Length: 192
Image 1 (cartoon, helix red, strand yellow):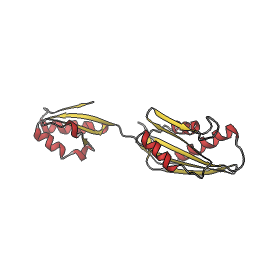
Image 2 (image 1 turned 90 degrees about the horizontal axis):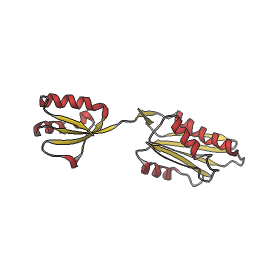
Image 3 (image 1 turned 180 degrees about the horizontal axis):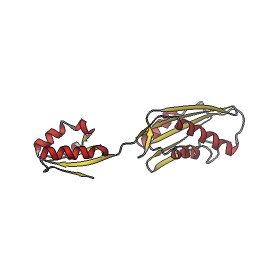
């Protein structure tokens, strides 16, 4: 099971007179990652380097640092800690001493890794779609119990004898048991 951040995180350090500030947060999708990075970038910083991972999608930016010395190490910090749906921004205020390519890789990657290491985490919940078929009376009772299963109703897929629900995968067995009890085994629940 994948993990993400439970709350935004922050870590700051000075390396050879340069100030490095890492900010990290969980994001739901690529658009949210891009919006967060744009909002957190500091115009006064010399560089605002960043990376995000959302499932198989990932991007990173060196923001003017030599190619591969900032964004890629930040992304490696995310991947190295097994995180998903995470965006990290590391801002640098130049302190007058050049760090060299290796020093930049260590500074950006290390600052991001320490920020993520100390951040609170939570498991990502896998949501599934369950198509439930039952009598209208059973479906009416199910609608009253959606919170019990942490389910949401897909309003586009409603009929007198069928509902489509989005719910965490771990609640599916309880839903199936409830449905079997309410319909004496006649109700059907299929996942897609």
